[in-house]
Image (cartoon, rainbow, N blue to C red; front, side, top):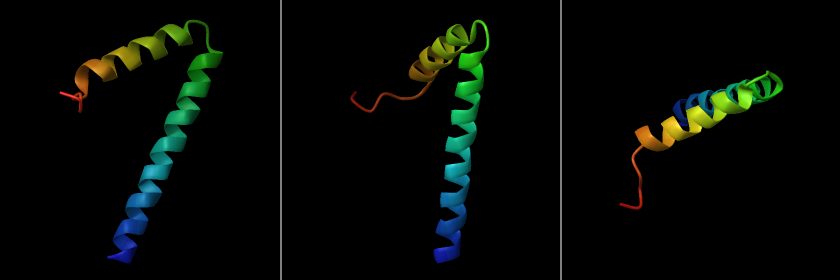
Length: 52
C-alpha cells in the first residue's frame, strides 16, 4: 500500500504546483484577474457545498 499512496501524493502535489503556475501566469496576463474570478465562481457553483 505504501507505493500506491506515494504515487497518489506525487500526483496531488503535481496538480497543486501546476495549478499554482497557471494562477501566476494568469495574474501576469492582461485580463487574467477576470478569468480567475470566473473560474472561482464556476468552481463554487459546480462543486457541492459541504455545509448543506
